[in-house]
Length: 491
Ligand code: BGP
Image 1: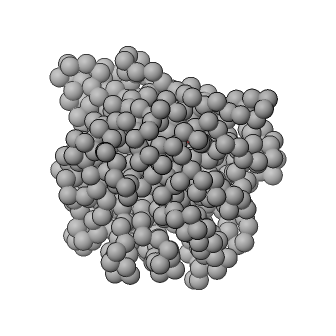
Image 2: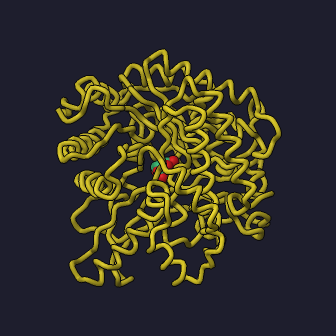
Image 3: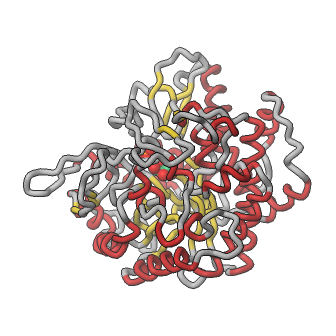
């Protein structure tokens, strides 16, 4: 049997994409609350002030805040061993820099973790899944300010102390490498990941497309450095509070292949892969900046005096206990910029002629997951790995009798799980798998509800209609069987 009895099977969500209740019980605005919905052809827009007439998908999301009991019961019914969720920073410190935490926010997550426990579900908690309080963006320019390091560490310590008896598995920042997508050209990655915007965008008179935000690379890499330091300090504090904590990093891993065997393509791919996929992991797992990062900074005229000797010590002492990543697709890289492009998670890539893609242009590559797991184990041989996001965004159709036949989703998962099992047989220490969006939720990239990932359907639509009721899709019963059989029964 490839999968052990204690393999962590489950699903993953983010607070801002499922909770809603965006100003309830003391919570204040955070980054995603400022974003409108788009679709595959329409980018999400940012509005500096809340427009009462506009539709903001995260404001109500799927109303998990009021329905978590029903949702966790459904996950329990599927046999989940693990539920990855994030704490919304602005529920705990509504402005990010408040003196005292907000008790109502702390209590909400106590209740959620207690509910998980009822079903024997282990929570896996991301401290920051794009949920930087809006006040930190406007007052501190996100992680560009070193003060934000202290604010994050105070928030992390508050959570560690409060939940130390309920939560063992933690992640510091979701997809910390997204500012490196597109070689650090700003935009969505800088805002989501670092809370970083230029003043002219923060105070823009008209809506701004996320793809048009223009943070400068010098600021992006300085802010990213501060985030590494914040993450490492949180790891150290967490271990002081509870030596048993498992605290990990989280990387958006879009695995890259050279488009052709032309050495120019191979080397371009090597460089992009290093920068996009390996740079942040190396800092967080090995505790040092890789040499290729310094070369990149030199080539791009980035002054690295922000990497102080004292910070280097912090990075060395605060390395992570396990490496986690999201895996949705692979893309190609070509030296020649004319090659045909395809869409991707936060960044576009070059189309692979051998792969099919989802309706959003994300290429489907199960074997790529086996390859990725082996490559990562080779790079970080001393720590376990976990796939904390993988899934298939698709349009679902509800039949007249209420059933939802999502065999395309089952096919996607079946092949990815098969390849994970093979990777375990290859010798990869994989400890768990949480699918993205076990329940339909708001898409981070497009803000859509119509891009559905769930085993559980939610009656909520892009025009704001729907009664939020939940339904089991065919994939619900299939995944239950997979978990019950420890990954043996994939039919
Ligand atoms: C990852 C994010 C998630 C999630 C997922 C799917 O990048 O960590 O928050 O949303 O991608 O992407 P999307 O929602 O754009 O389909």
